[in-house]
Image 1 (tube, rainbow, N blue to C red):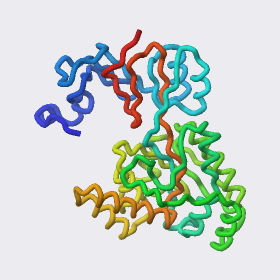
Image 2: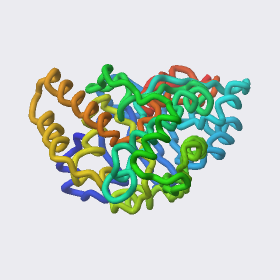
Image 3: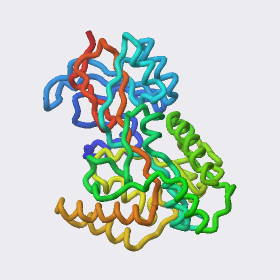
Length: 342
């Protein structure tokens, strides 16, 4: 982000983090970490005037608390609606559900260095053992789509030629047998403890893998521990959760984190070919050249089954029916410039 050099030099990074200065339609007047942000209209905004004088943003990590606040009128707009609450919102007279095709993808990453998932046959077997269409249709209530790589169809670098691994439990069992994996072998799936929908998905994945002879131990972690300790330091089991927004709709935003050596979300795989491809596409301004290279990255990851791509979710908002002028943003970043209440 572009920030004011003189202000940062005057107050320092820590003060700037608590009271940032930008160019938007609102100004930050109060920020309390883990609690919320209060904004007021910026009378000097270059592109018009917001329709409300203040916006109060609350940080509410617990899904049940967010839903209670929305349904009681404590908040007017709620982001990150869990799928389990969709029917509740649809059946409520005071709020409405708004969904838009978003950039967020979910996948399982694989430990590729010193476990049974270092064998590509095992990685392909796990892909084939999971019915991703059922997960989208039933657990996500159709509010998403299956993916063949770590990106959605809107992303620069999306490769339509990639064919998904078929749901084939018999084929998965055969590959596991070829790889010498004994029925009843236990593997571990690490995930965050604050994604209620994915915790349900993880249970279903456990059942699918159990059907082909793999017992899955699901291990949950507090978000901060998971993202700063478990994954970057290579402390995961054979499978681990990855969710990424890719808000730029450019595969580089996700692929570099996943596949380049030394990146925090890539603790196990060091591949000179992937490193070279990812670095090469960053050295050109040609959209066509970058797209071609990023498609090659996606194909290479697919052929080597470096991930288990699961689904691309819709971005879900719960909105009071008193709210007017709200336009849902696919990148999960709500804009309040034109929003007001009756």
